[in-house]
Length: 146
Image 1 (cartoon, rainbow, N blue to C red):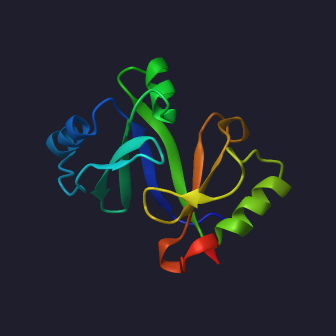
Image 2 (image 1 turned 30 degrees about the horizontal axis):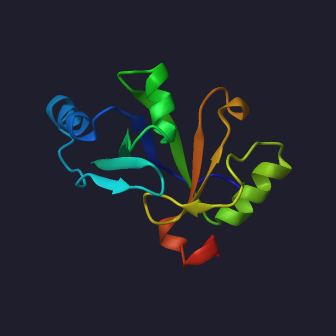
């Protein structure tokens, strides 16, 4: 198993709409999705497109959101994670475990904000960087990622 292209960088922020305006004003990144709530993930998201990837702006939906805890430590926000595509999310998960990495949560892939299965690898395994692995959307055929 080898990671594929960088799909997006996740940036935690207290306000996705304001953050999107900053990326548009400062960097000319004006192509962005409308804000969308993902209650099952505890976040509100805007994807800002740049030529080679996306920036995922993430705002917490309530105190139970994983982003809420991040913003308690970093009130203005900051880089939360990097996300790489993989051809098969189940194979990627199994490889991460066999290589000694800690897959967060239950270890079972779940549907992320792009509508494909994802897993997260603990930052302690990657020099303090939270890594998201997502099923390559072009290869996703429905439940399970096969």
